[in-house]
Image (cartoon, rainbow, N blue to C red; front, side, top):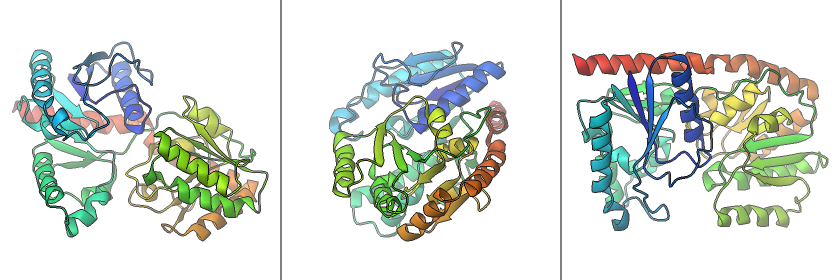
Length: 376
């Protein structure tokens, strides 16, 4: 079977790119499938994650202006070229199934390109962010755009969501639930003895790092010898805002913006607690990775991801925006290594069900189902 994955690029670090590398590598190394990855703005850059040599890469060279909206006239003018190039590629390659990974311009035209080929759209963000707009639309453009998006999504053969709560946002019957697979499962786990709390993700408002730093100000009073390490990249203004907050709260010795890393597994194995302060999540891959490393987790119970991953046996879910409760849970864990060890070991046991082979069995079943349905 030929399988085509479509994504904007694979040179930037991110959850979508990391998950794609895991899925594509598994298929290339453990099946007889022929795997293609098509990008439209790789710009000659090297992939940030390792991909098996058997995978064929094709870049369409559309190169949208990422500093502008995909619906800015400058970018819209590139859409016809994009459609022609991807249509030509699919006709020539003739895959049995196409998977659209990232949420960019091609999301809105792929169901209508070479219709005989089954199309899957996978979502890595929460539809929760659209809820208020849908209930009380104040912007006419957004109101009609969401109706357009609903129509497009109904034309995909399958929409893949990461958790069952997200499926409730769709009125169509073409939704499948497939969680993210584990990206790694180290041979050993953290001894949870280091005085380091870790978090990781892009530096963006949705991650709530400003809230986390305020929480840390409460925690640091009781544990001045501990550090909070924040891994991730973002735009300069967002990073500077956090730096200013850290300076204002006199936390420069204990809150460290570590930037991006290619060795997050090692960083987790040398930490003792993982924390997540996001406003919303879909199915945060980083929580699976933390559990695989034997780290107990403290997270806001935000819509809709963490509750699908964390339970009372391996972490702590805190009511959204209850910063005092969040700080108290951190303080309890920081003061009790035995409890950290107990929760971390259970976290490791509980995450096994997300191993790549298990998740990919579900993906393969979906591929065959769609290919057979279209062929009949």
